[in-house]
Length: 473
Image (cartoon, rainbow, N blue to C red; front, top):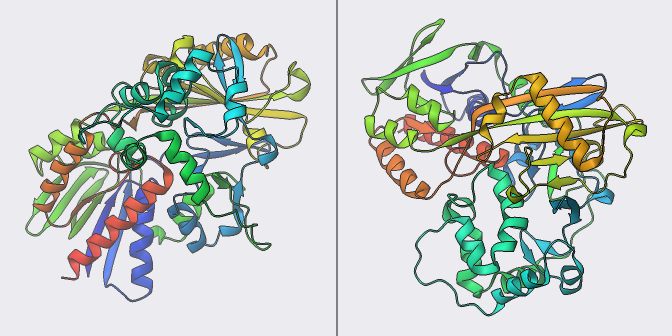
């Protein structure tokens, strides 16, 4: 029987393994699989802890419902009814500007205003800044189809204030990156299409609102869908359930793959604490920086291009406080912080306001603070005591919280967030060409075509389907 070896047990690798396992169960493919993960657990950056009634997310706390692959996988593994929408009664995002929290105006879609009165009444953007954003309606579209940075694009269409106070903290924060080096084509191609098709971001968003079908009421026997979705027991419920569907004998934990060699029409996989394994096809479902190390003997050009995809470090700090110790009302789901504020944290999410089932009862509040990213990677290396001290000082200054947290958890992700910088698509083109010269080798994960959980699931599923097609030729 042919064998596919999957390196990496994050959500992309799990999706690949699940696809292969299901094909095998259904008798559609006489192909075996083996999943190898260097940690002692599966799930990668999707990490949820249950502590004294708190549901704490170490990595992503949600996924975009507009991208169907996460919800589809949840349905396949039987946890569709555990899908959880946000608490819409608490919805709202704030931006720290000038030391004050300002609510993003109603009707702001991504970073584009679509409702005049709420936008005009907003205290976030100055009147000169609002007028400059409105110029988007009259500015000519860019000639040519060359790439540009997110910062250059937003400044050109909407002005510098929109970049600094809205786009950078909101959109740049998704990647924990630098808007001045982020490739618009790779990260947000929709904006280019909007400019190309409508000549204006505002006109494009208004047209999208008109075309959008009225929201259907959620089915009585199913979950309530919102823009962001999670699971009743946290995001870790998805990889945990997928892992439970796999044959445990086909999963190796705590094994670090050190090298892959080509062996005839297949591959030889070598690693610490394991005998060399033969693979007829190979799926490398790790970050690109790790894939480069693993594949250094397979193809030097492939390794070089994988190494050129930069990654940054980040951390999340989850803190719980007694509700009575919070001296000011917490509004919305939380707030983001522009770089120009000079703060040491990127954003704060009020987890227990954003989601149900995250705290034992209403006497406590759970919040999550984001540290690091492209602007402050050095802070991720702080030890626990120093990081906690720094985060608490920021919360005291911004929210007036002086109380001791009743629970604290810190999660660090060193070099764990891929950056789609200028030239990313050109790098991917070369990577794809090199892979075509190495039949049976496939890449999956967030370093290539999308960083979110749904994109990673799609990449793992597609890699498995390609491996099956290759082996059945």
